[in-house]
Amino acid sequence: MTLLGFPDPVNEKAARTVAAGVALTGALILSTGWLWLLLPLAYGFVARVLTGPRLSPLGALAMRVIAPRLGTPRPTPGPPKRFAQGIGAVLTTVAAAGGLAFGWTTLALALTAVLVVFATLESVLGFCAGCFAFGQLMRRGVIPEETCAACNDIRLRQPA
Image: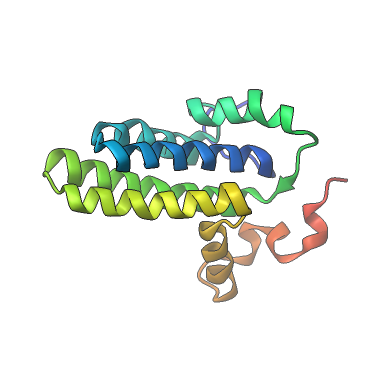
């Protein structure tokens, strides 16, 4: 098994569990002003983009401990989830750098609030805004169709 790479398919239950952890951490940041929590949050996103759950403590907890207790895995295409993690990585990295290095607290809290909204949507409703954006970019030809065959053919999303 290689260190770098992202799983495909992804267990949606694990992805929603990660989103719940992100939403709770973001809510804690917003309620306390503890901007230092953006550092482990940003690390988690970057780790998940590069390695899936392998080097992400939250991803590993979701995959190995919580999701198995939620029943049968629900496979969903990996590339859109990786794209969504990339958006989270950008938001949290900019928020951390802005808030901690430059003192731009308002920017950091605003980006964290956006993150909390989208993480809550995914964890509670199963709506992944990053996945939606990924699909729109595929339809417009920005992301090549071969990047995610299962995104184009719903029959490929079901396990064999």
